[in-house]
Length: 110
Image (cartoon, rainbow, N blue to C red; front, side, top):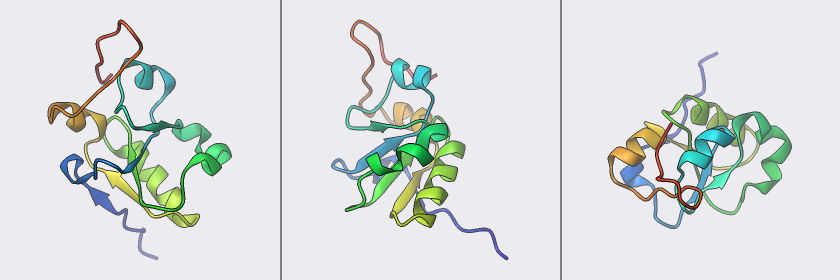
């Protein structure tokens, strides 16, 4: 059996009104994340999957693309239309896209 292809896009192709799911760990999220993102760490996704909207495409992001690819496969196998964001938050930040963090913290990707 062939491995399932993971639908993938680049950060500049993510619609501005997209559902963006960040599956990084809590410390990574706290350091800096996209302002519109939903945060569910990969290890919590199975139990919290009901928090992910099902009525439109979900763009999944992590630091570099590995965890988000796994999350994308999981979501697609369970009835979502999910797309992996290649390069993750590292490339997001390199492209100068918006990052926010806790008050008083300079946003960064760790």
